[in-house]
Amino acid sequence: MIRRLLISAAALGLATAPAFAHLDPSEHGSLAAGISHPLFGLDHILVMVAVGLWAASLKGRAILIVPAAFIGTMGLGFIAAIAGMPLPFVEPVILASVIFIGIMVALALPFSTAGMAVAVAFFAFFHGHAHGGELGEAGAASFAIGFMLATAVLHAVGIGLGISFGKLQGGDGKSWLTRAAGAVTAAAGLLLAFAG
Image (cartoon, rainbow, N blue to C red; front, side, top):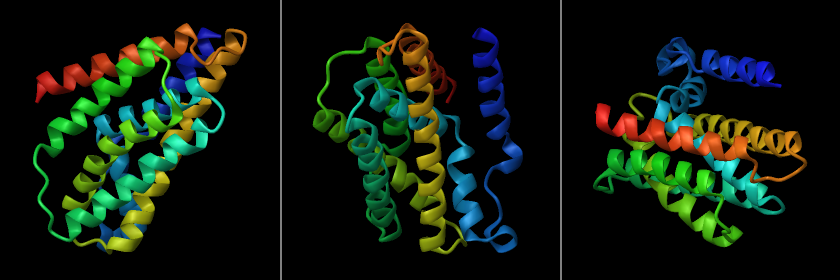
């Protein structure tokens, strides 16, 4: 069991290696650049996987509603950025999202689907704004489709891990493995905050 978890973690780590980050849109296309973009920042990866873990811990409709709230609101943040709307504290809020969502997963507190969706949507707006601020020469529509697809995949990884962790412990979505993953996420967010 532990061996499979380590192999999965290693595969995820290799999948997000810097060689795939920030592809040049003129060489690789805007869609590919958008897909690679969320995979560049550890903060983005951590929070997007943690959103999936958190949704999986609630089960039911939350598994679809919470990631959809993140992706949809992230799109709105992207539009706001390319429209020139200023947004203060983008990077600090992104780091706070890693810590907050990691803590929520670790504590496994009772949370409604609507409350969880609102919480992730708040942070998603800042993530989307960051993507819009780094658009560069990429075409906006295809770049947005790319980073939304990559985000959906990262959410799915988190959901898959959350469901797998629950099955390993008799079906409880609030397994100690899920909670430990949340604690590691929050700790990583703190490290990123203090390293920057």
